[in-house]
Image 1 (cartoon, rainbow, N blue to C red):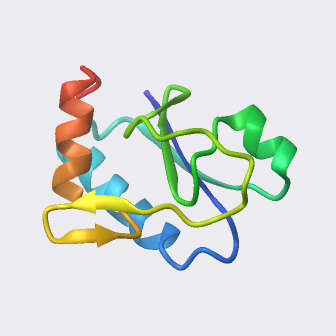
Image 2 (image 1 turned 180 degrees about the horizontal axis):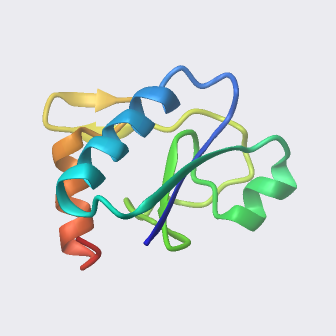
Length: 102
């Protein structure tokens, strides 16, 4: 499994999202490869399937089925605690299991 956290430099949430992804993977798929990638242009955003920062891709697919955009902007997630700039670790674990990747 290849996991990529796509982000923009100006997003304050991508590091926390990456940490949560790593924590989730350590629990359900410790051998998974995790990388981060900075998206710098609208064209790159389109090609990569970027849906705002941070976007979590698992084997090239958005883990949370975001709407692709070429806008270099932050993303908002609906969490049990309300709107947030990153999904919770629990949400990531659940999404990995639902998609059959855990």
